[in-house]
Image 1 (cartoon, rainbow, N blue to C red):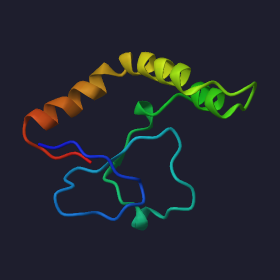
Image 2 (image 1 turned 30 degrees about the vertical axis):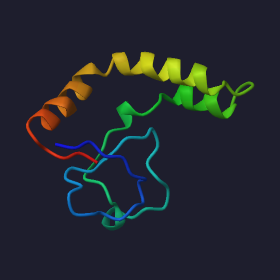
Image 3 (image 1 turned 45 degrees about the vertical axis):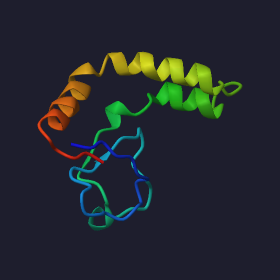
Length: 96
């Protein structure tokens, strides 16, 4: 029942189990056949607004602590998806 993290382009390994891509934007130039993940859940990634704020798209970039606080606040609204993942882990499934 481990929860593991990897980069989206890391090769699949035995024991990875269900591979979940969590990011707002799908990686560019990756063909469907070359995906290393089973599902993509963009709603668990930072919002477009938060992503833009961190990279300074509309004003000066925000710092890590502000980014972290805002992201954790956004995730409170995603409790159903997070709970679903927690149940899968509790049932013994591996998630990467």
